[in-house]
Amino acid sequence: MRVECAWCRKYLRDVGPVSESVSHGICETCRDKLMRSVPVSIPRLIETFDFPVLLVDNDVVIHGANSAAVAILGRRVAVIGNLKGGDAISCENAAGEGGCGRSPHCAGCVLRNSVAATHADGRPRQNMVSRHRLDGDTGRRDVAVRISTEKVGEMVLLMVEDLVEEAAPR
Image: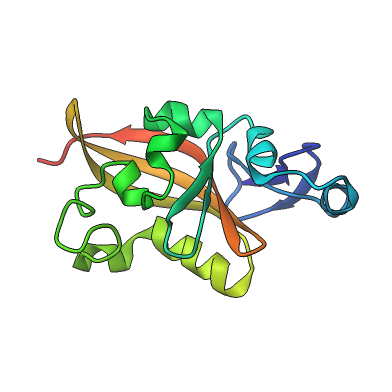
């Protein structure tokens, strides 16, 4: 898979097996420009992405979302702000006792583990696939989400690069 800069689309590296998939990071040139530029608010920064991006803390509590993320979640930023990711997507495990992150199933959540690892060590995670069973207004559905993470200050950018409906379990 090709990894490219989300700002200038410059090739950064290949990760994993060769495929048509593209993941995103930031090149040194764009990072340096961004750091030297007039301070940009995080909401303005994540709005520059043309794919869904959430700003989350190490417990996957949402602190910001761009328009693309709001569109796929089907909720306003004011509604999803301060929700945990599992609550925002209506993950069936978040509805259990203790909420998002507290179910025995949450220990294996790729999304949660990718965010926590990136927050802890500062290294981005790319092309991670996280599977979720969602309980929404239209019923239960299974989805596979391809994500990447990047640490920004004490927060993590959670980039949703693909969301695929999977066949319902039998």
